[in-house]
Image 1 (tube, helix red, strand yellow):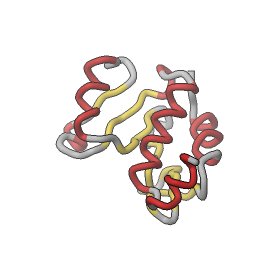
Image 2 (image 1 turned 60 degrees about the vertical axis):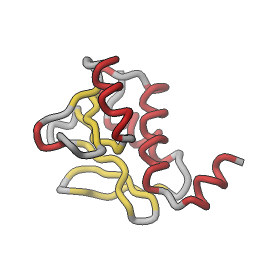
Image 3 (image 1 turned 90 degrees about the vertical axis):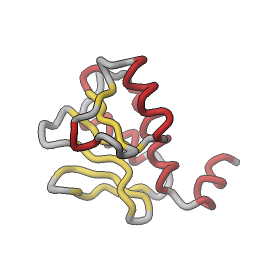
Image 4 (image 1 turned 135 degrees about the vertical axis):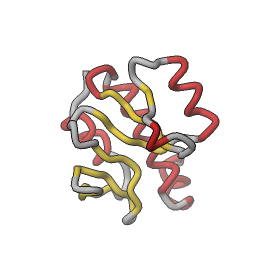
Length: 111
């Protein structure tokens, strides 16, 4: 079961990530570009995803991944933190990070 502290620890372990705020809640950015934020309820995380993977995630694990009408049509998915394990959360955060990190930074991580 993950929580905001899990998100913080895992996000800050990624290269050049800094914590800040986005829409008044905790958020994580790479070189100034947000890739994850906690919603106002403190138990839901917004991350960036490949549009083709979004539907697959929501269909495969609806207890973890979902969207609200606000996010329909956007490359973002909502994550229920109490329902996700840290190892899966780490993958989700890294995938989101890769969508915003500069290509050179991603390449350096892959070496």
